[in-house]
Image (cartoon, rainbow, N blue to C red; front, top):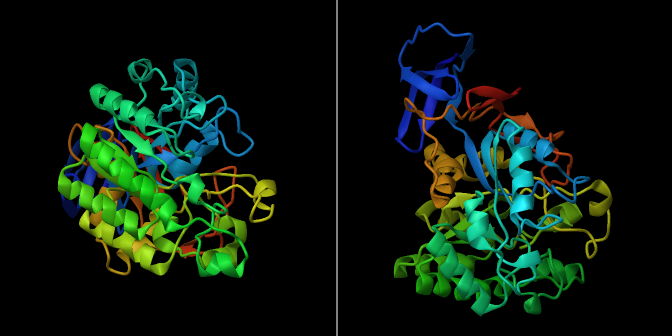
Length: 420
């Protein structure tokens, strides 16, 4: 048994925000209240700290199988735990692709040994080639929580229409990477003043906007639960807002780098600020923040994308896109959203725990009796310096930054899986 004393319990499911004690027994929360004195093997003094449901990241790349020099399931899970995450959803763009039950079960089995809940999404198309649907029913039966070809857009509307219909029939969501390659001169950097300064073609907003518009209407037509992944364009935020108003079961993700940085970051951080879709202008950043405020954007995810130092040391045109993000996500949410007054802490936690779980039709974590003992304990204000990572990778523009939100403990299924 673990007794957590005097913590500020912030629960986005119940709306609770008050100081109390929390008693864990095995994998469950068994009691909450004031001045608990139950005997326990361990007592954690959480005075001055926030006690919240474990965070959920609905968009990570653990690179396993196939690219384990970048990350593997164990190191990815350790990075998740250090960041306060107790549940993650891995993307399917591994090698081999998670387009079959055997590869799905490989990840699931390795995930069970990590100490956090590792879910594995399945691919929409075989080999991520966008030509033929996977056996979505078999993958769903094997435990895939949803479907995505993340990293590659689905350009065949007829195939996507069939996929949405099948996903709706199975009661599972489908998540979409929205970048039309025909409209991109060079990926990873927003097409604008910075790309012009660098003589780098860039990726314009319209490359995202045209696919978001299409897929919002397909979602409306099919009734499928659809997520626009890592939204970057202010126009796309408005399109999602409109589709929601029309009755589509449409959702959207935002990453900490998209609501923290602008394209000018490329001038400072080079390839560590190269990502797909790119960070864009201050107007786009503000539109994303507005979308988070009014519920147009439902989830904050990291798109945790580890790469080796050698890969990121290449030129801007040859380096891979993406950053490692699990260990800085909470801190950036506090720095960029809560401290400036855009969101309350309760709202931030809703975007980082409750909403991702509900998107995947899971019961969201809550600090109530009989709920799973999945918790994060952190300081809302204490600064910590980004100096090292549990991830194998360190490809981050936030190295050296001072962030709030120091995580002290992550507890998953009643076990302490991270302690600072």
